[in-house]
Image 1 (tube, one colour):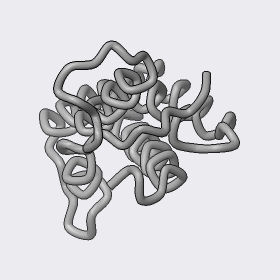
Image 2 (spheres, rainbow, N blue to C red):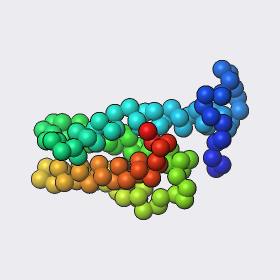
Image 3 (cartoon, rainbow, N blue to C red):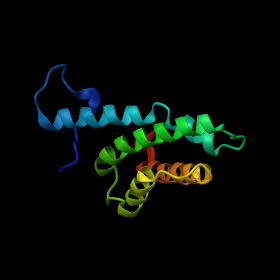
Image 4 (cartoon, helix red, strand yellow):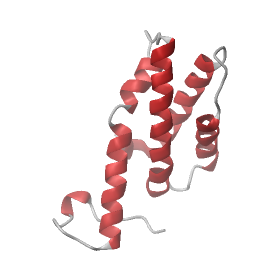
Length: 125
C-alpha cells in the first residue's frame, strides 16, 4: 500500500479521494495513540514511578489499546518496516502474565512500545 502524501491540513472539507481519506484515518489513529501514551509511559518508567496493582492493570489495558493502533500506523510511518520490534510488541500484547510476573512484563511492554514510538521519530509526537 503506498504511503499517503497529502497533508491532513490540506484536505478539503468533503472528499472521496481514497488516498486523502487514508491520510486522515492514519492521522486520527495517531492522535489516539498520542493522547495519553507518553504520560502512561512516564507513570510506569519514570524516575519516581511506583504504580499500584490497580494502576498497573489500567496501564496494561491502555498499552494494549495503543498497540492495536500502533500496528496500523507503523507501516505508514516507518520504512523499512520494523519487523522485530512489531513482533515483540505484539507478543507482549498477547501475553497475560501471572500476578508475580505482571510488573516486569508491564515494564518490558512499555519499553517495546517506546522503541516503536522512537522508530516513528517526530511523526509520533
